[in-house]
Image (cartoon, rainbow, N blue to C red; front, side, top):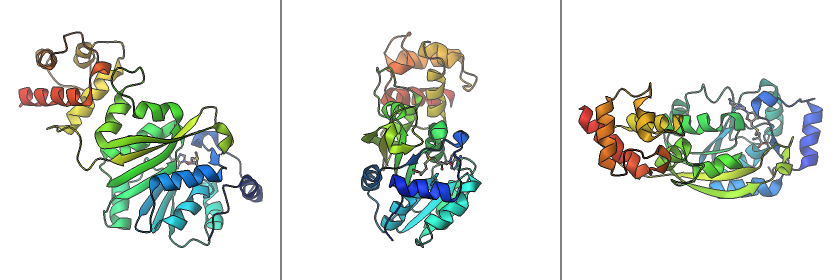
Length: 290
Ligand code: SAM
């Protein structure tokens, strides 16, 4: 079946038929632009061999495109009111499974095990912006097998994901994303491509998972604790950030010695360090703590 939604008139008709009212708390901004939808599907490189996880299908606009291109689609939607609508708009697609749940509470690794024999999936979504970071970090930290994540996010968040050290938007999210994947901004998308219109600009970003992380660390959990601790208190030096972190159980002398070993001076700030330097710091702390 050909996708029918994505054309504003058809979306309006479906919303009217079901007397649907948008829920602000769920970040509902539905796509109403076929060019943007085509672009997302192309950027994700979906083929019949793919199992796709869609987070927040809404009324099924992108789901129709995904179902047409992929072997299988699993769509997780939190809003109960959308479930009967999805059964309707997706009735002619036989490769779609709808799950009515909160994606942050779902065991996605288990789901992938059951639905795709644990083989890597592709994640494609027009994300609810209020939980972009927890969704993406959750997928990575729980080691869900993922080939790529192609998502619509707030423009500013897309920018942050691909920033390098020294830029003002560089932070924990840039480092975390770049540890797991290669980010690429596919397109900027203006508010008029959505209904209702969001207050901010949006962008589609593709995160292609690394075969193996670009840096080697002995203790991945420690790396992420270090990253979070260094950016928790932005204007502080790295030394102060790490010494005052409730998350880190490392003696002050060890922290100071390891920062010294970096060779960037004692007053270096976290936002000046590259992923390689965070990895070096992490490994020298692990060695001293053994
Ligand atoms: N994919 C649709 C589209 O592009 O038109 C809708 C995208 S809309 C930006 C985000 C969707 O995510 C909404 O349908 C919303 O109800 C859903 N959502 C919000 N929070 C969620 C959560 N925690 N788990 C699953 N879905 C959620």
